[in-house]
Length: 157
Image (cartoon, rainbow, N blue to C red; front, side, top):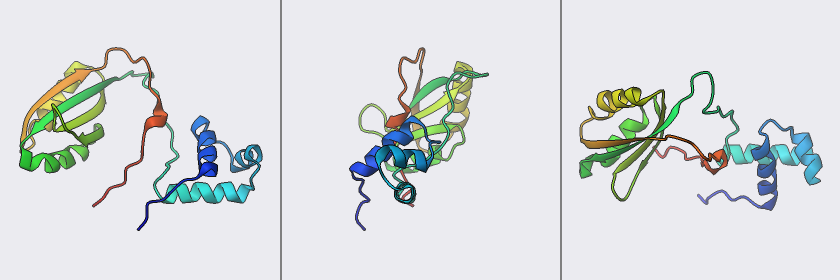
């Protein structure tokens, strides 16, 4: 099966949705000089092909501000994929990837404070078979977060 492609019209539609995911198809169509049905159909195709997902994003600031936490995990070589999949199933985890370099697995999450991070690492991650070590880092001050960099990755199971 060939990889879904996007063209310039799709990109222009995506630019409008990136600014405000609640914009109506009619507004986008009007600004781009397209029919509303064309915009609706293209958005539907982009969603069906897992190219886009329209959703609400919450701010880091809020009634209970959270800190971004990075967890670098080293695992037994033969178990890296299995450990990464187990970590990905954990409720508190926001991002997981197998890596090349210092760590075998990178985990990103949000925590209230350092003690919550220690608890999650010690009680959840370090107890998994095959995990050898975990390093943690808390983000101290966010200077930029561009939510548009995110990419949808479908499950391949």
